[in-house]
Length: 360
Image 1 (cartoon, rainbow, N blue to C red):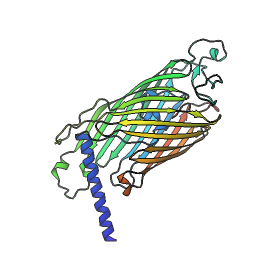
Image 2 (tube, helix red, strand yellow):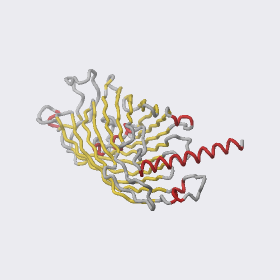
Image 3 (cartoon, rainbow, N blue to C red):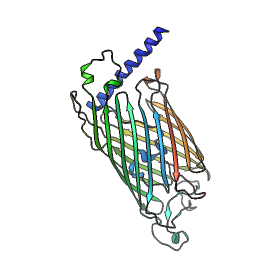
Image 4 (tube, rainbow, N blue to C red):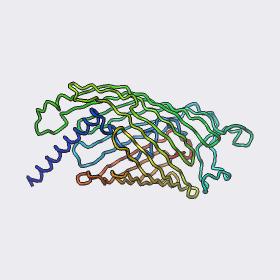
């Protein structure tokens, strides 16, 4: 038993040191990603793309938590809070129903959530069928990996241009502050007096800018975004060789929504992520929604993990979802997987109005 405990402690120390070295590579040499990976990003498109601020017809509030590679000492953990809402919508605007003459996809669906003037809905109006809309939002998060902690908060703005009666093009940006902390005291070392490690302590407040765009319709979406576009330099007390900077993270996302009858929706999608010069990664997703009450999904990330997700909506206002990633990389020998939880609140929905209009 004593030998087992010794091996477990040794493994924990080895992992902490490995994580610390990986972070130094990511920060000092720009060799890897610096931000958390959340499996359930499709439930909260605003989390990675500020252009989606105000895309829904209500205030959308979400809280999420992820514990990556559970079982590892110092493994990545993250928690976030986001909210966004449309502003300045015209009084009396009503949602468009899926029309019989719209043939992009073969099966008829339900309310799409795009807005028209009341006069046009009764056949008396003219024009594109949508109004220009604006959205505001905010976010706060805390992420940690071994000795690295990154906290942040900020505000977002999105503008949604109508294209015809059923398509929107959104642009958005968010600006805020990041607190970057590196505390080598959280690393278990064989030599606790290692000067090279102890000298790397830093606690810095940095400006942050994220940008994004999205073209979306009730039946498809495609968009891109970038986080940490300022590439801030990180000052360490005794910096190691090479430049220490926050690295820009790039995301491309696309998907299609198929209506399987009037209540069931199938959404295949992909997401591409790139952090120079780390290898790019891609997620293949397949989500199924039933009447906006129950939903589930599968994700495959080649060389990394396979994930499953399950959730439900209570009274059209409260969303609860859980995801589990099964690690298929070399870390599978010591990791018990990744756990994620998302809670969502829809504020401002009246009566029996439907909730989710699009994909998130």
